[in-house]
Length: 397
Image (cartoon, rainbow, N blue to C red):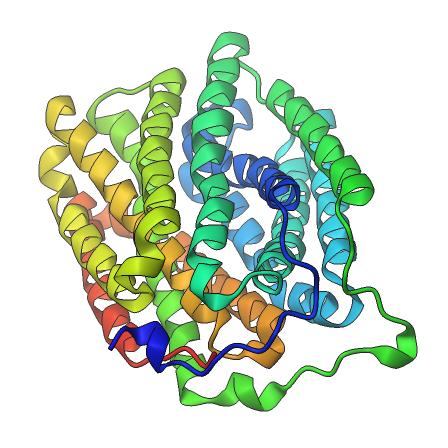
């Protein structure tokens, strides 16, 4: 029997059915955020020169934005109690403030504060956006909707990071990148405010109560551990790949941007794969197979990284399988605690942030001390442990 048939029938949605326009607006807002969030990874080697700091110091920018994103339970609670659109708007306002700060004052302190604000923006926007879409879509169609939403992660690399890194290569400055991101944030905020209906507006005395008991069940806790381990493994690779390839293959900023575009193509294929086939193949099965294949690609990276002809297909398949598995896991997490959906999704974002913070603290020293072989080996082992957690998680709707 398919896993969805074993789940309880989902309650009727309290909001109107999701429209294509709403899906595009919510996804577009996250795309702008993702571009800012992800560009700091390939930008690290350039910033060490522009800001006059070393790799361990510049990696603190990644740490602070990830640490700030761990406050996503606040975003989830606000979405559950005050409304999803208002929470998304707050996130986009913080995003605009962070990019403005980075654009106006390209110093390490300005970047540090700016990326704290960008991390907070993710903490508010992501769980609210996921909850907005999930609450207007039945579980049997949620793979499609959240798969489309997650294309923003891939498109953020393909349409955001890659061309923005070309701007850095052409101008030899980082400030123009953040002016462009500021404009994108303001456009997204205007669209959310003017074109996105808010079906959850409540008076203060009508605030929805979060069912915290559902968030303390073994299935919910294992789902959160699974997300933390998965993204810890993911960022162990993400954080060191730009300096590793800069050193091994002498890649410049434009070439690193092109490599991230290739990653974006793989991620886009993975997200669309979930959207088109995830519901039919089964969410848990899709997630497990995806992470197994991703672990194999991670283990192969040190060998492929010695030759560009081998690196490109390995890199493409790594990001395709990783993205497919990560995106396939979101519908599952959204169904673990249906009466506290936004809060559960927010806790999952916090869990991924915790895993990524650990990776950001460990990855530079692990790579600098032991090399890429140990780094990828640890990442593959963590993925193996996360799969055991996944197999114990069951949807509750």
